[in-house]
Image: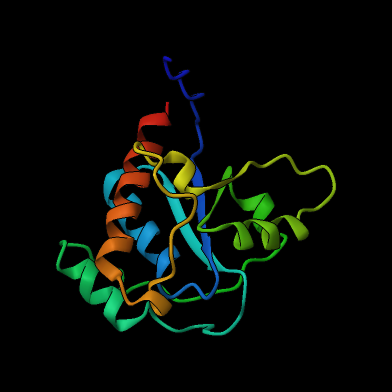
Length: 155
């Protein structure tokens, strides 16, 4: 059965969201900004556990091994005003997506999608949290596939 083409997107500002904003979402931001430097990116967490902290050391090391530096990023919490600032909000897992939707202001139509929806192979339904799994490279492999798929959908 042929796969239907995915709809094209044209966001100029994308927000990547995970739980604490120290592993998955800053990694996704770093990978995507390297692929599409013309798109404004940011990342945030649904919880405020690590406000102002840089990305987690082991994640930074895994990214540096791939030639990416996210040491300039600092954790912040997702807020309702992000619906005004971004054209696309990308969640790392279903729990993040639900937490984002709880804060959606009435009338805001900004799409919120799971990052794995963009992965070309579609063999995962979420990006596992390497803070708990300790699989930083496996997480980055999935993030790179999803980022490549997202880039393909941009106009």
